[in-house]
Image (cartoon, rainbow, N blue to C red; front, top):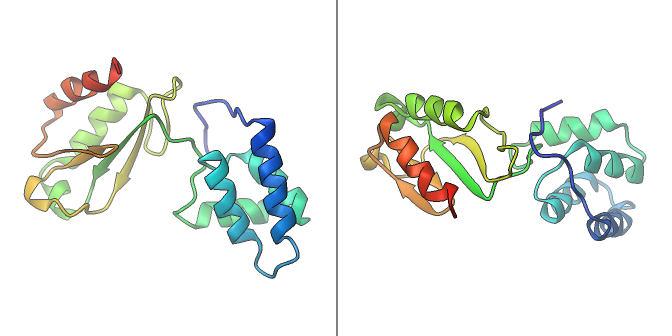
Length: 164
């Protein structure tokens, strides 16, 4: 299973909302996908604790739920940070050094792609083309776009968010 950097902290209200979603869908054919989508909307991601509730509620093996969650890229096993960092690894960005940017971010944040820092501040992921090839290499932090990056830019950029 994927490593979660931030401990699961679901609330009773979230669990009640999830159980209501399961109840509303469980008699429908193909209920698993809409339930997973709504569950991710409730929690922001699909940790194993949430998958267990869904598996139990639908009387499905946990392995089947986990298999669907890990197959579809729309689902996340890890929470997203307050600041979601996405580095474009499309061809134009990669050729211009995006791999080095990604490596530097992993080093500075001490996390791997798809993970979140233990304080919940930053999460890191790779993406394919964000349509800013003229600014390659590019990364986004939430809605902020940074282009023509070099590895030495990373510390300064992260510092802007560390104190927010």
